[in-house]
Length: 324
Picture 1 (tube, helix red, strand yellow):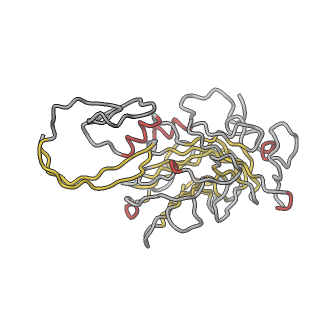
Picture 2: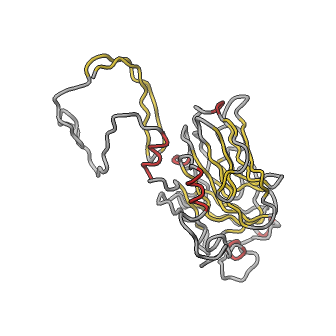
Picture 3: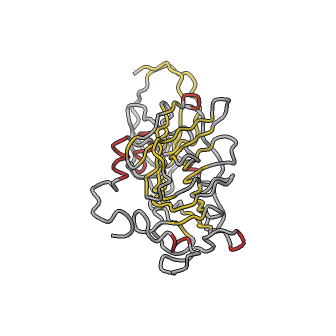
């Protein structure tokens, strides 16, 4: 095979793009009689020290979505079920250990939830007790004043950036179950309204809304559902972002709202240094109500996949909310 091309190389780690660069023009025959080796260099000088598994070579260019899918076989890259029922840790069920720290505010804040507590405490000032009846098992209750959860991978009760949740140039999906009668932020990765940020929220009209902000005059893009959520019932609020296409919102497993083109930011690199939040943005916008089963995927779910997530992947035989 002869080549005469100028190409670029892109490196992905854990399904997420990290670095890229150009390859200078080369011509010639891409063939040799050398053996294929894993774990050492061709001159047998440099050797790998560690474990290697699942080595694959493709004879075509993989898309970011294909790489993201292969990394976790379609599962979410972060998944907070919020079923712990006690303590200040929201565990990540994706297997990636992107756990969150639960912050209940304090008694001076004037909110309802002044403590984390537990599901069986009987204390109406506890986030866990007030969220004990979730959509699936338990949930977490937020008082709209100063409660939130943020990624805390260092277990030091501070909010940490997670590089793998920087969507870079990937597609992505964000989703959560919510129960509310007012506006507020649901899931966000927000650097205080500047650039390279996104958030899923319930807007002032009661709609499930998603907004992404890149750079440039046309980089602030938002869309929302037609359905409103201010009825105090459980609803599944979700959005997909397809970099080569559009943003689409979903309600209760179905497409809802008008897709919006994101061509103006299709190639922008969403690389930031802020944590993921549940129940607020960096700039505020505290959520008032219950949040359950929050997920982030590093690819855009199809309509059928979204329906499967809404139905827990199969027919559910448990009650409409709470524990089976």
